[in-house]
Amino acid sequence: MKKILLQKITQFNTVYYIGRIDPRILCKVAKELEMSTTQEAQRPLSEKRVKEIACYVENYGILPNTLTLATNNNMLKVNKIEGIEGVDDLYYLDFPNTEEELNAYKNTIDVMDGQHRLYSFHDTIRCLADNIKYQIGFTLFITPTLQERRKIFVTCNEKQEKVSGNLLMWFRSKLDMLSEYEKIYYSLVSKLNTCHPLKGKIIMSAEKIFRGFKAKEVMEALKNAHIDDLCVANQPLSEDKKVKVISTYLSAWENVVGFSFIGSDAKTAGAAIKMAGLRYMLLLLIPMWDKAINHHKLFNTEFIESTIKELISSYGVLYKDFFLANKTWFRDRTAIADAANGSAMKIRTFGSESFNPLGE
Image 1 (spheres, helix red, strand yellow):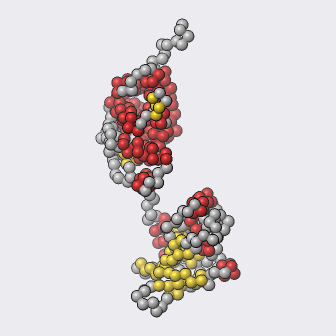
Image 2 (cartoon, rainbow, N blue to C red):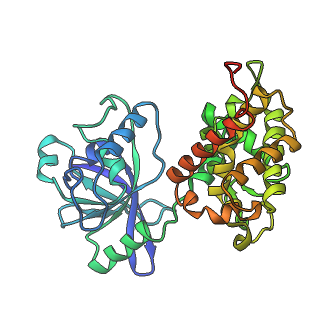
Image 3 (spheres, rainbow, N blue to C red):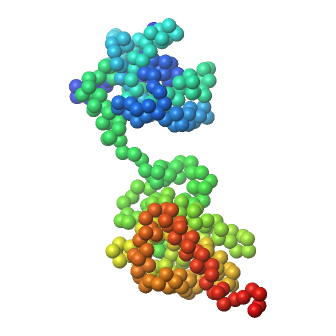
């Protein structure tokens, strides 16, 4: 047997221990689980997720979060270390070391939290070589009672608030960890958040903004709208010019429909002040930009407002009712894309109906 050092932790009447161990060895005594099968107190084990972590670790990935473990019988023993001056609550765990001992202690540990991390080190999945030193922290409960298991379950699964993708992206921006795509669009969105009409309306991290737009969602909307296609003579616009074009374009929508991204009431503005409405408007930016190029028009407020008015009039509704009358357009992303495609087709025909390319 091998001695693993532990530090004792006491919270009210509950005692547990923290330590470190090679996860490749821990896997050999942890309860064997089948992929995608239902468990009593955890979500099913995802083979895809386990393999992703295994690949991440192989590429020098670190796993700083501790596993939460529990013994399910009395085979594993915790002993107190005595006689070290100035050191309290230091213990050790007699842990199996040889192949014979590991076989004898199979299925003696339940993984209460962190199962995907641990099983990524299973011999049938792991990518990490045997000769590489790798340890992981763990929290160990010794044969916890049913009541204690319930408390642990609630703490691990219900009391942990999931970090939003928007906030995670903000953290990555501060750590210079954004992907190339994210770097481009994050910078663009940051500048849009300083200009009318979206000034102060974009949630860059986790701040509370009434009817605000999450930066991550705005970035996705800009990408789906192919904003990179904003070019002049096949030369992409600079970031600052893109900001000016987008801001001018969205301001024109505000002027025509009679709403404001900042301060409008949902009862009178409808989807216009929601992410669904913003997605729709952005999807029509490139068709209007192309129209301006094809008809040799300046892409200014006058041109954009005129095109928007012509578009809305073609649907037979008042400008101010446009985002209220077409509610089914904004129920989901597919509906928004379909509605935008239909509107884009209309925009392409404006101004060309009377021209016969045959000259007849």
